[in-house]
Structures are given as C-alpha cells and as structure tokens.
Image 1 (cartoon, rainbow, N blue to C red):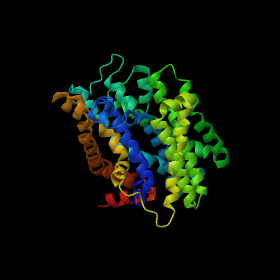
Image 2 (cartoon, one colour):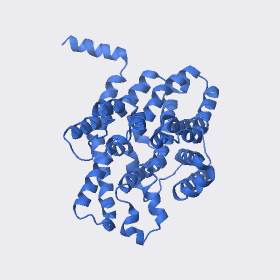
Image 3 (tube, rainbow, N blue to C red):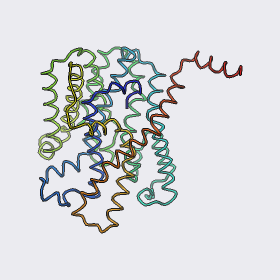
Amino acid sequence: MEPISTRASRNSGIDLLRGFSILLVVLHHIGLRMPLKKTLLADVLPGKLLRALNFNGYEAVFIFFVISGFLITRNVLQRDGALSHIELRGFYARRFSRIVPCLLALVVVLAALHLLGVQDYIIHRETQSLPRAIVSALGFHLNWYEGMTGYLPGSWDVLWSLSIEEVFYLGYPLVCLLVRRTWLLAPILVVLALSLPWTRAALAGNEIWQEKAYLPGMAAIATGVLGALLAQRWTRVPRGVAWLLCACGAAGLYLVMMEGAWLWHGMHDGYMLVLTGSALCLVLASHGLAMVENHRPLPGFAWVRAWGRLSYEIYLTHMFVVFALVRLFKSSGDDVSLGFLGYVAALPSCWLLGRMVERYVSMPSERWLRERMLAKPHALRAAAGAASSL
C-alpha cells in the first residue's frame, strides 16, 4: 500500500510475493465453500497440494503483514532519511488517503446490502448489529469485535487484518519519535517479532481471538520493519546472497504450506516464526535482486505480479465475487465435482473488480486527497487568498 509517487519503480519480486499471497486468500475463501478436494481435480492432483491451495489464507495474511512493515518503513527511510525524522503529518496523510476511501466505500455498500436483506451480507447474530459493525470497521477494532461476538459475514470479516495494520501504524511513528535511536528501537522490534508464538499460544481459549488478535499480527509487521532497517544498511547485495535468501524463503514457505502438520507437531505455534522469517527472506532477496544490474522479473508470472499490484483492492472486494459465483454455481445444480470451474471464473473476476475499484475509487481519491493533505500550509493560504480575490 505504497504512495503513488513510488509506484512507478515497484519491486517486481515483492509484487510477485504479494500476488501469491492474495491469490491464496481468494482460494481459501472459495475453498471454505467449494473445496478442491471434492472436485474432479482430486483425481489428478495430490490431496496435499489441493489442501495447500485452499487452506493457507491465514498464513498468506501474515506474509502481507511482513511486506507491509518492510514497504512502509522503506518508504519512510527514503523520504525522511531516518525513523527519528519521520514527518507525522505526511505519514498519516498518506495512510489516510490510501486506506480510507476504499474502506468507506466498502462499508457503505455492505451496510446497504444488509439493510436490503441480501443473503450472505446480513448481520444476523443476536450479539451483533450493523451500527457496531460499522464502528468496529472504521474504528479499527473489528478483530476484537469478532473475538467477543463471533464471526461477521465474510465481506466484513476480511477487515480484521486491516484493524491490526492500522492500529500499528497509528502508534508506529509516535514510538519512532519517542525512542529516536535505532539502536534502542531495534531491540524492541526484535522482542515484538519473536513474541509471535507466545502471544498466539496465550490466546488458545478463544479460536477467533487467537487468529485475529493485535499482537501476533503486529509481530509480523515488526519483522518487516526490521527487514527495512537492515536493507537501509545493505547498499549492495551480492547476487549469490540474494538467491540464497530466496531459496531459504521458498523452502520455509514450502514447509509451512505443504508440510504444516509435520511442522506443527515439532514446533506448535513456533511454525509462525518460520512463516514470517521465510517471508522476510523473500522480501530481502527481492530487495537485493532489484539492485543487481540487468535483473529481470521471472518470466511467466506477470499475471501474479498484476494481482500483487492490486492486492488491497482485491482483498477488500473479492468476497463479492466469491459469494456471487458460489450462489450461481450451487443454483445451477450443485455438482460438486465440477466446482473447480467456479475457481476458473472467480479468479479473473476478482482481478477485474479490483482493477475497476483501483481505477475509479482508489487512484482518483488518493490523488485528490494527497494534493490537499500534503500541500504546504503557505501554499494553501496562497490558494485561498487567490480564490477570495476573484
């Protein structure tokens, strides 16, 4: 979710990792309703692979957290020089202009669908209500609200991760200015990053809260922040080191996503550190390879990178496609063996909807807001004076 000004020089490796992650999220939400193991694909593909495709959406969100911490911190370091010099007004303005327009649009649409009584969008639990869902979404505590009251409908539920991210970024610049010294900040981030298994394990009594609590997600973001601080000192990365990091990261993600049961048996919640550490290796590898002359993106994966570029928009809107196609598929005969065809239709539809939201909501509103929120005060006064003299 980087500023407009940096999008022309994107990191193709990070876009690839982000595209892979958002793809897993979408496959997970389809798989909860139409598992691949019940389709004809089960006759030709290993069950382990089908399970990995359908049930790694939660892990994919933690990859997003690592990427987010890295990119946001990297942008601050490039823009302000050091975390101790972070410019509060600009930081919050950029976050607001990137996050809030799409979030507001989504909440308005979801509220309207609830009031119209549209299936899949009605908040029906006795302990929940539309006003409280709206407040929790806009107040960045929807994860806590679900932990206390139960799951919200799927299109609301995806906002749990946004709650974690934005609470982190509300306090992040203030902590940077308060601590001021990287050698003091880094140990705090290390402790937070390594706390991930213990903060998850401590919440084992509440399944929803264990999955969506603030501290585990913030631990993953802190991992990405540490990566950006390391990358600042890493002015040139040997190609061999970058590829070694890439191999380590890919091997770690394979273990988490394909051999998760075995890894859990040996490490329990510690497997989450393998996940975040592997994601960080891949992010640092992408950063290092981007500095190598004549480095070219992996061929054949342009479509995955395109998903990565639209990850925020796809993440917020993909449940509309999932609900519509699952309803359509089941109403046409509910032949589970052909359920994989729903995936074939859903994936390009999710990308197309995300692209439309980016073109008509995200980009115009972000540009408009930044032109006003990031304008210098004296420039605003001059513009106001010119307007009043007309």
